[in-house]
Image 1 (cartoon, rainbow, N blue to C red):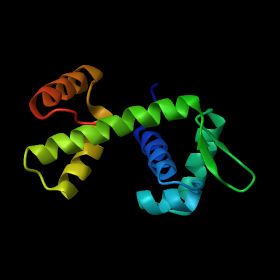
Image 2: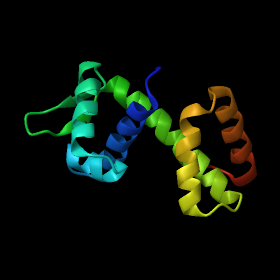
Image 3: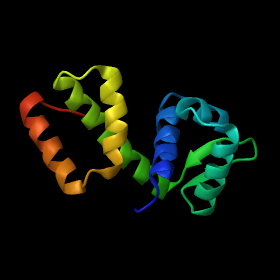
Image 4: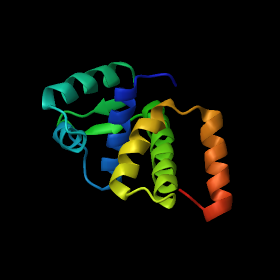
Length: 126
């Protein structure tokens, strides 16, 4: 499950957008991530070639199993880390930004301990 941070961000964005209902299109991803449409098109091409996503003839993006696995993994990290930082008194905006930075580089071991600790302290964090 070793892919680039930017690819993880794209997969996470697809997951979040798909949870909002409706089809996910490249323009939605570009808007959410604040990147250009050509950047998204290039990323979608690479993710499709590597078997992380599928796109239908209308441009609707769907996560395939291995893409979904990574997206869920990153989204969980983002959610837990954001809530942890907010619980520590960090503003929601800063907590979200910092969680984005941490979610990619934190080891699985450290994340598991953080999640376990905050589950004990504040209850369910997901």
